[in-house]
Image (cartoon, rainbow, N blue to C red; front, side, top):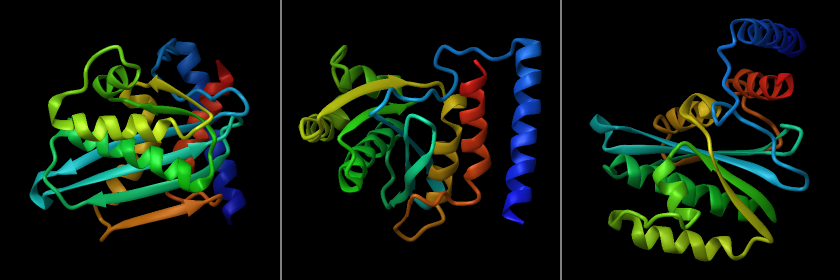
Length: 197
């Protein structure tokens, strides 16, 4: 049954990509996931919040240069954080999770331009996250190679799906090498889209 679902997903992705190419609605500059150069891993992060719950959901997705799912994390923070603070917690979770999984070379990617500009040291971090930000920079020194990449929100869809899922958790869920079934179609779509350009 899983093979049938995967075949249907692949067929849909191919059809969707063909339509995107035909209508020229795909913009490759930051609007989609792109694979990292070997031997680096792509670490996509995102955060979402629910004011009524006074909680934030954060996500981390680790993929290799072929787009293969390596690991994923959904984590709930029980605090009424603002969007910048929530995104910063997602970036921090991505760095820590990558270390725990044993990643040595990585591209850290998210859709928060403010945080990415600060990590690239092109601008100062907002004061509300300055201590968290400096902690992230220290953590980054423990990797062999780290680079940072911005992706538009529509190109970070799998991470957003996983962040929303975190809001329903008590604490966190992690997956190693086995992609959760609800996330697989979005990941397959991104990988096929990156291959078609």
